[in-house]
Length: 314
Image 1 (cartoon, rainbow, N blue to C red):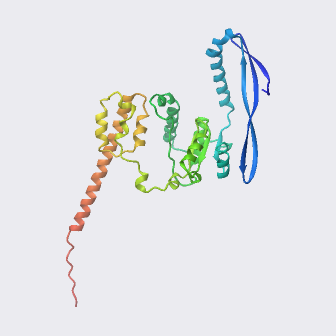
Image 2: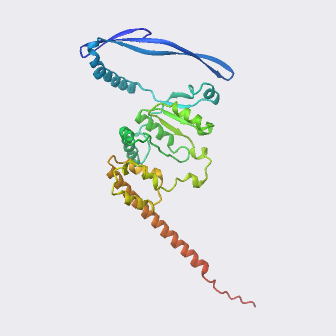
Image 3: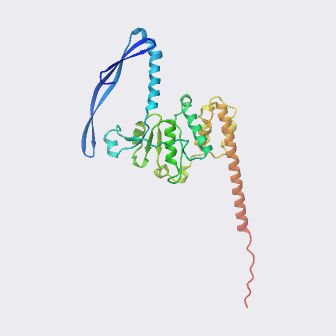
């Protein structure tokens, strides 16, 4: 619709008039590479007029219909984008308004064309579907609705193709975040706030961006992670078994969380976690047994007396 243009819509026998209203907002100034540029943005809105007898129809039926239709059309016409960081000067002087530079994501990667092990591909697809369909569950238990994947390997092994495939599958944008360009935590927070909802944030070369030793790269041994978990709120009888397993199995917080979110039912999630911890406990016991045998063998070799040698000199 053009500025101040009107259009009439009909819904369930009622008539509605929409008016497009456009107003100029305050002027912003941006300093970039020594040049001072003035930018003036327009504020746009729509004004709806209808007979008061249709008020309930508008709020109960018409508005929900408009929102669902607009979402459907937006998804059909959506052009996926990949966002990269603008220069330090642009981010600093624009106060975050122009923190990201975007281009169209022209990578037609799909799971059908992606070269990957079939079982692993199905596992990723099922995981994505489970995550997308459980947004209300995350909200209900008070957890942030987010999912993390770690991909590693030398260049050319398909990491970027997998990311593009996931973006195309979920129909969401990609934000390419280079931590070496970030100078403070406050700047990182501002950048993340400027991302859109339901997007993929790619952190490149995270192992090179963080100056951590090997011990700090490993996550701490978990015991208290379940204490605040929603699965313990009902005083599950399985919790004591889990606690005993945690004392004997070396697992990370991410591994525990991975098991807990696989099932919506708390008891089913705990049973799956118990099976996982039992397997981890057996693996640790086997590893400790092997180490003990190796140490005993080294001690036996070290304590064994060397054979006497007789040297005959003519």
